[in-house]
Image 1: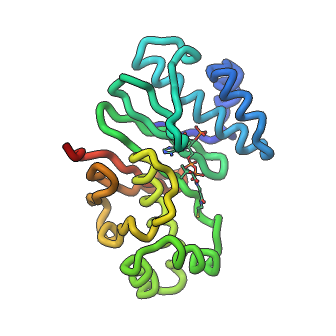
Image 2: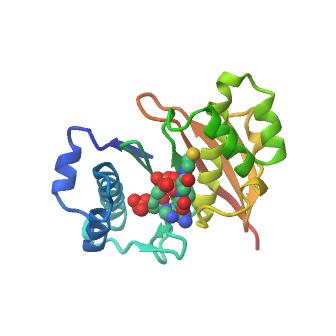
Length: 211
Ligand SMILES: CC(C)(COP(=O)(O)OP(=O)(O)OC[C@H]1O[C@@H](n2cnc3c(N)ncnc32)[C@H](O)[C@@H]1OP(=O)(O)O)[C@@H](O)C(=O)NCCC(=O)NCCS
């Protein structure tokens, strides 16, 4: 995994080297917030540099496509990857031959009442029970942990946000650092990381696919 911040000293150099495609730069220019523009460009620059090295192609020539739900991928190649950004941070995760999803979510983005409202809409009954049984001051953190893990699985599968978020029940993963869940056409290994100097993140990697 590679992570960077839009405020890192070498980010400006990376962006100045224009590794991104015209489409990516046009998309970046449509963001209202400068932070979002830089996050998109930084993420795509990291992707193109790493994938270019792997495929022995110039970064700008890496043939990144996007599925109907927005997941970037490269057709016909074993290298799988995913991107996430939050609050100026960007993380890119890579894996050979197995689908991968990553979600970084800065803490402090939502308060207790927002977390309670979102919990009712997005968590399973078991997840909500777990949250309510925890002390009030850790519930936002618990909610964000579940949210990150759900997003990582949804992004690994490639569907993005779904209506039935409570149907993806991850309550059993809350008490251990790593576990498995079935979703869509596959099983996924889900783990959480709290790297130093980086917001917490979750990663989901395909372990087996239905035949
Ligand atoms: C895919 C989705 C779930 C990601 O949303 P997000 O959390 O805003 O974004 P992240 O920063 O984690 O990921 C964005 C990146 O994921 C990738 N991505 C986009 N759609 C994707 C999909 N369907 N599957 C996997 N990856 C996807 C892209 O690389 C994108 O970055 P880029 O456009 O700069 O290339 C999005 O569909 C969405 O709707 N998110 C809503 C988020 C939200 O409501 N958050 C509340 C938090 S409490």
